[in-house]
Length: 466
Ligand code: SAH
Ligand code: SF4
Ligand code: F3S
Image 1 (spheres, rainbow, N blue to C red):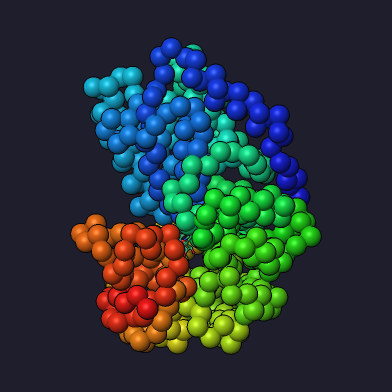
Image 2: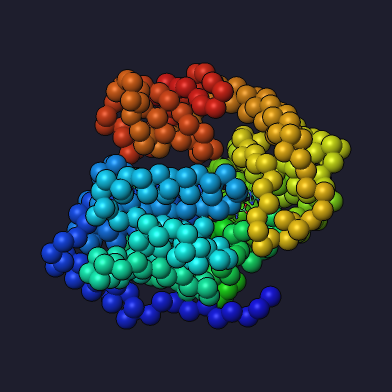
């Protein structure tokens, strides 16, 4: 592992960006509205809240994509289909721009950070006005200002990806449930995964910065935080923060925030200390997302996951002992290079043994620059498609069993939405992160309400207010 130095973005630089935010409003002819298109994971969703925060400070307001003066695509490149979707939409805008030449097109996020992408944007996509990678997100004010003021294209991609920017304004999309980043990047280099290349090395925020952010959220009435990181349970290692993830959870819960969730955890770093904290801390919700990826030891080794199926199951068992009501969910990949039918069946067997509440299932997608893309015996598409269909059917059965098993139980639901069809129908997530629909009134919005489950559908629960 190289010994990259992690450094905070200097306050001076953050102040300089704030200056650009103010200067922007003095430009005589400037974009007044924006639309952000977000692809990918929670990290990107939260990055988009920061992008929206900066644009709002600059005086822009949100508008539909067809009308917005500035359309920004926050892209994902985890699988080929994510990348194609984003590119397709960007190219669609090119047509729109023919009628509206003043419109600005921006692209940012993981795809821009891929090897050679900045060059290809420069050469092949002349209609893109602004592009920046995941490491230069906080520079949006400067890039937008310069693009408008000088009328030139602004493309800025930082190859280092070793910084943490504090103090970027955030426009949160929910008043009750919000994201808080605890660490950036990833050091694990699973052989299939592009994330370490486009998000950089693992780096943790300082506990005081995190706690201060959560304290402010509590004051604003937020009920639930989702602590974010590619591998949250390695929190605190680089730079050493003096606190591991279990310790951080304890400090965050001392703010009085009613509900804490976190994502994502790597099975190899799931410590006894963390399991104990989950067992004794009722503010931590009873849901654990623990990506298994495969149910076969040879495949797990080829994926560079650093655990065996037995070790995975042992960790899951310990979690269930510490917190018997905990719901486990997972990520699974089918068609990893060389995966045989028998090896795939081991994944099916894992799904049957583990009784996951739900699983995200993916067909392996080769990513340029990752090790697995060079592996022999890439699995044909039709074989992978057949496997994922069987895997989804197997998990659906388990989900049905789990959800039906909850009928009769009383769960606590954080009410976040009103049904569009029926204003008396409210919805929110229970502790296990399963959607619950029930009839209530507008006064329940944003509150945590006990609901007795009366019925289960394929993926959601129905209940009655207790
Ligand atoms: N850091 C998290 C999430 C990473 S991306 C973790 O380690 O779990 C989310 C999921 O996408 C992964 O868990 C994996 O199941 C899937 N994934 C990543 N790269 C992929 C690829 N090249 N093809 C198919 N699925 C992939
Ligand atoms: Fe990708 Fe593995 Fe890191 Fe998750 S832990 S982001 S799958 S390299
Ligand atoms: Fe995609 Fe980047 Fe997330 S590649 S899954 S948006 S970290």
